[in-house]
Length: 314
Image 1 (cartoon, rainbow, N blue to C red):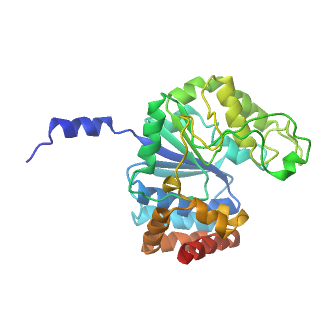
Image 2: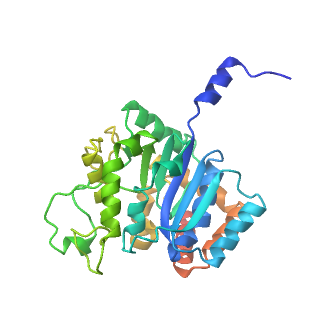
């Protein structure tokens, strides 16, 4: 038997263990779980995936996940945990906020945690998307890497129309990388504070002083957690914590964009490489199966069709 050389052994020992994670509600957002999960494991077979659901999974989603597990269509390290966060009242940004407030022990054994939106389709790239951002994170010895930010206030009109006057900055939450356990140790106090805020959030109206009551609260909260914990944040709009921009080559497909943007704007944000990778994904029979399961929800089905139509038009 041929033994691996010492250099190969060192490389194996030095490979970072990564987990992709997010939190979603059990409404139509839970129908994104199969596409989110399968696209990640197809792009990065060796990473872990943890999805936490507020509420119970729909039967359609559970059946799809059971099939993926039973038929071994997705390898190894992944889990979807439902019926979590019962003590947190449901507000518009509750789930988005909770993904940054998860306990350290949820990610024991991992070196990095990639926090993503549930409605992303993650794709492989010629240059590893995951490795690219970890390398940038290491270059500035950061325990949090926000790929985009800072923004001076939430951009959604419903909160700006309610007298938003303070210069509250936010960090884009679609791709945030946390170094474990450093991030969790440094933010322990701030995370405890904001979990308490979310639990006590009441009422139905939009209020800049009420936790989770407006969209992008999670991004404002993330910025404040960093400031309270003396952790660096991006210093220039649209740039990472290392001051560099994010090339469209490293973009995945965000299905939510197809609900709010026209094709011309999306075209500027999706590279030819991303288009090519998605076209290869469309040829995968397992992808067709998970897409069919996700499409049992009308809202999700519409977004998947718009994405496919856009890709074909390219």
